[in-house]
Image 1 (cartoon, protein in one colour):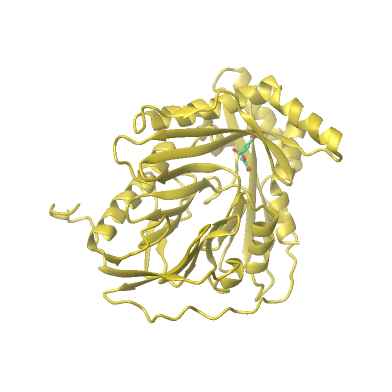
Image 2: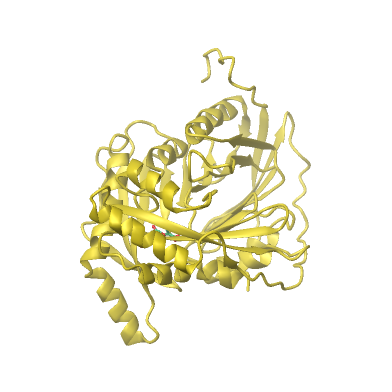
Length: 419
Ligand SMILES: C=C(O[C@@H]1C=C(C(=O)O)C=C[C@H]1O)C(=O)O
């Protein structure tokens, strides 16, 4: 955008001043979170904690990700950045979360924190970001955890019968050849006790699901195993998940469960829809993009998943925001073909998915970033209402009762974190 006249519809962006300095290892990230507004992106103990909001951009509608990509370019062009470390996650960054549906009432956000505390395998840093001038160089003091609390979650608009009926209706439509796959979700709702410290639940997720992306942004939190897209210095990668099975109760049955998943034609089909969909969306940006020939079984504390890693080199300079826009919604969370699947989701799911199954992650000044598919997640509203979401991919051979059980397993991280 630099050098061109801004069009009249583009709101002006503030001139951000950004400075990163290296620091001693701050230790575990979750206790550093702001109790009132926990802003986090972490995996395996590394990642980013944000405090305050130097800038908040909100988006809605069909163009929400494209608008975000454009707005971010203008923010970057207007910023003055002093980043001697120049590593992944240093300098100017925004953390973001986008609604699943073009028609969602939930806003999508990019938040530039006033202070970012970052930690990777061998360095740690603090970035200060201000409008026109840097904020004071104070790293906020640790706030002691509030007491334990419990949130009982109950079915929302779809109870068990309602969900089984929705799955049966989806299978009918697939047998009528309207579409090949659709992901049908349901919600659980509850209330946060007044004054509850959400960091307790976030910590349970970050410790219990270390190999997942644990995130918290604008009241939306969770622990997702699925990387929508990661862009790093010209390379693009993703981890596609589709196909799930319960963990076994002992070593033998656990191994059997993984083998059954890896050899199930139904799950392999469901998985291939998802992989081909991601490859097709990335190919125009990365002609050499490939997926491993065979999916592997990914072990999570609550589930086995069929997983494929996708990798390529970018040839068109796309940013991670451009790519989330190109990829979302994938067949892993919508279905195949996309348009038919989205129509059926609107018909069969009597609720707004909000940011569930949308992109969540962060973007840097150079456009690099890491974005997950926001699964195993819940939204806490300002009035304390908690809504958790989980879905399952439905194909011709799907059995409603089994899909219901699968959603129960997918709710487990959030249910247990709030228990
Ligand atoms: C929809 C969810 O998960 C997605 C659906 C999967 C499946 O149907 O097997 C597996 C992983 C995710 O891509 C969810 O966790 O709610």
